[in-house]
Image (tube, rainbow, N blue to C red; front, side, top):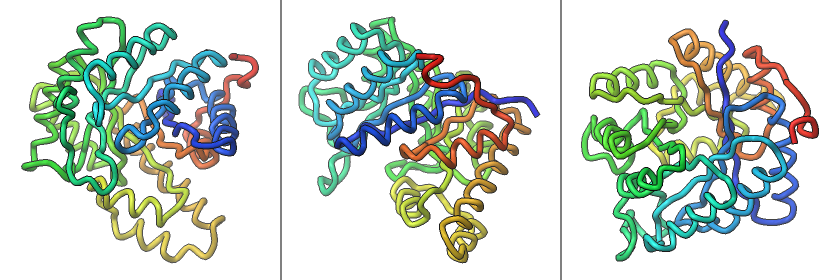
Length: 288
């Protein structure tokens, strides 16, 4: 089996304990030789400063390529581009450009009066700078705000036309979900790379809620498996097996890059990488 490229998503820490957990995660997964790592924003841009600090720390203390998440929620154009200028000054060369989720309890997304209307405008502004590799989000299953079945494909096409270099999908649980989406994108004329997002299920209840929020369907066999798991050890074995099987099918179908949502808990992601034949290359101290 061909060894795929991998990348990992991290959360910014909210406290000292979270800082240690983030760094432990970076140390555990850096030896897998990721093509890049990304650091997320919270809903409504609530972790904007923390994201910037985490990106800066990883960029300075390791040689990992860091992609900073950037949204246009609750910010003016000037404020957003000030953050972009800060990343450029720090030497960060990749941005994951997203519309972003509104703050909880505020209803649907509403653009700031002086801000970007959505991800396409944000991508256009980043592309005009010319000094970033721009990654974007993609939904292999209908986004909760999608107006019709192909709305997500059409929107992704606009993102690529605006200047995106690659897309990372929301997580899903069946390889055919990704293949159908990939085929639809190709039919729509999308030629840029689409990287499947993989979520090893560390916490079943949390994953189930997250899936409901973002429109990800859960196969009955997956739900039954976790509902009947006797303890956390059995659940972890099931999660590793399911994620590995999904990745195997994706690789067999021509996928060359896998993006893992780590939730700052590296063990399952590392176990899946090992099962796929992705061996550690070096310790973090050797690549820092």
